[in-house]
Amino acid sequence: MKPSRELNTKIATEVFGYKVWKHKGVMTENHPLGDRPLRNYSGEIEWAWEVANYMKITLIPTNDNQWFAFVGTPTGWESPQAAFQFLQEGNFNDAGAAVNESPALAICLAALKAVEKRSTTSESTKSAEVVNTESNVMH
Picture 1 (cartoon, rainbow, N blue to C red):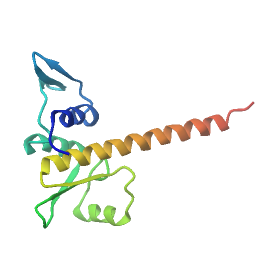
Picture 2: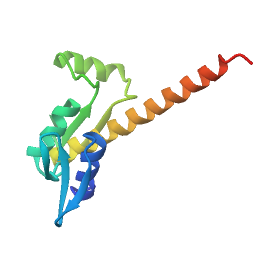
Picture 3: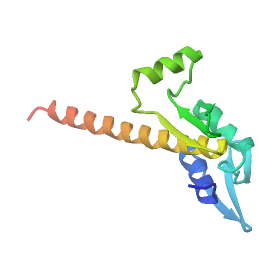
């Protein structure tokens, strides 16, 4: 995958929950501080850092000039040891990861994967609650 307006739109809508629309030929997002042109999250590290900070993404350079971006817990890590412990435990149900030569793109891909997994986990939990509630209903 390459940086694109489509990917930037997904970041704005699915990660941040912004609305995105075309205004006078310019893609626009409704940032909390006011409407602004859609940021190039997937192509410029300046804007990818907004994603990294919001999603608590860990970014690690690798030996082959790639970047490993990892989203773990929604609250982030209290220490590097906590991040390594999380990785060792291998419970990646709500996590997202990506490797890319572009750190901005790695951040965005990892964020979207985490959002997708968290959404799936949330839907599964809601379904389980409905089934549980229905089984407790007296007939």
